View (tube, rainbow, N blue to C red):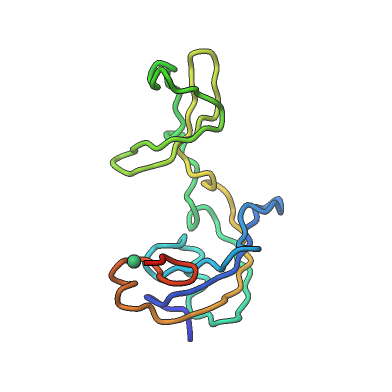
Length: 160
Ligand code: ZN
């Protein structure tokens, strides 16, 4: 069966940056299962997988525009320590949820200087070329309830 819209696809993958550093991998875990064509994966990866079948292996290099987007300097802000709740210990690297234009985003504290806290709302992989090595473990039809719920059920998915 070929990868197409509304198929459930299981993939084993390793993601590296241009320096060859492994950023993420399914190695030692279950395959990643997703519903194809509904925006669950980054666009560049969905495009590369379209039409492939079980057992296919591919290497694909995805630019930020088809990955997690370019880094936006507007999402990097310096705010005062006082804008955090007083009882929260602010540390470099800590992450919290915020809203940007009505969208939920994850914000990371990237620098602290005295009373000034610099936060970055970019995705950790924004601006990064994504080099994927992918092997397709399974392709099957999605069930009606999977399409209805918008997620995969069973192995690698929701158990309910
Ligand atoms: Zn469900």
